[in-house]
Image 1 (cartoon, rainbow, N blue to C red):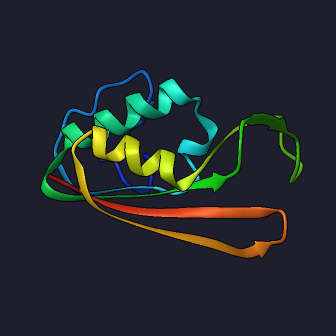
Image 2 (cartoon, rainbow, N blue to C red):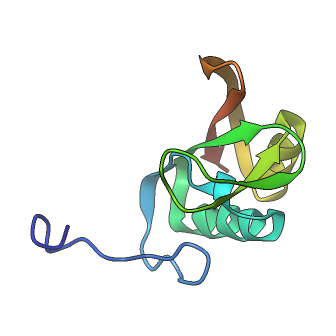
Image 3 (cartoon, helix red, strand yellow):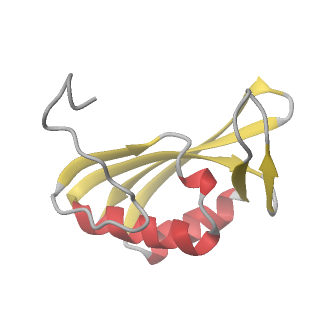
Length: 121
């Protein structure tokens, strides 16, 4: 990536600080691989990094609990599942307003995606 875009940089969203401000942060199929505490930490970091009125768009998998899966020829991956009420509450606790949430069951009968777009207060 550095060869194509020298301004790109590596960021571990759990351990690194976000040292800039943004209008928009997109995390497609990222937070679903974090436990509850890591998810709360990341939502707080993203909130701090957004300008007032900035947007956070991300996806989670709907369900209960957590598990490890090995599919698509990949190494085992951790999955944390959410209910829409839980994520709405967590976003509100971290200063997000105008939370829009959609449920998408079109990918497969066993995967239900929660798609979220929230605005920083």
